[in-house]
Image (cartoon, rainbow, N blue to C red; front, side, top):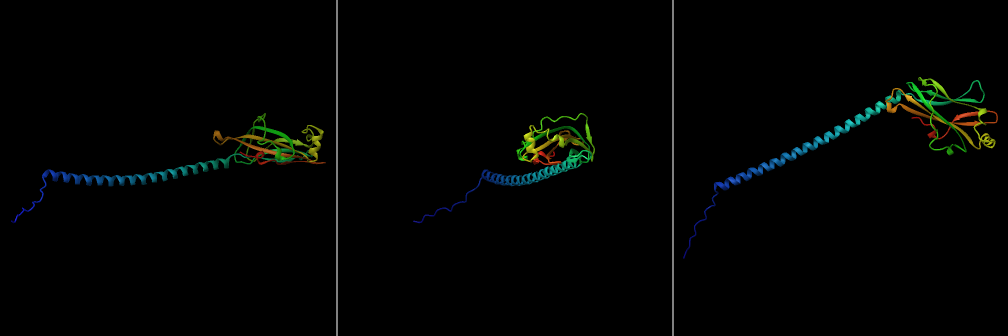
Length: 228
């Protein structure tokens, strides 16, 4: 017996299935397009952020450079009080501590302070320096560029008076101890901003009591000779 089966007929898509398939393809294409557009936008945003960060860093560097340049100009034009010791031309073994304005603009001295310490050597001076409360001058002192004023005078006759006892004076005369005269000047810069107008100049001198002659020379640790 020969049985003949009918040939299979191809599956037929209904219109409903075709529409669903086409919609799925369209949605997949739109999803891929959206993902590509999103990635592209993220890359652009990243490039913009990197560019913005670079621009911000450049602007900050430029601002800092401009600020430093402005400060340099102010420092170059400001007054600078420097200290020197000058021997008296009329009195032997007498000395004067002088403050000279080596800057380019006027300076107003608003206060001064000074102390005398007798110690073994400069390493035994108090750190930080002890000045006490600075006192204002009796009359305002304005120094134009190049002008100078006396801050402290000292002579040989006063060498004995700074020692409490005769024994200490002998030790100073024999250089077993040293007598330091030190102080500071507070002065105002008239062209700087208000928060940067006040400056200080610290000074320190060593009084040398010789057998017949005396001397007064700039000495002391760095913190005793600072300028702000």
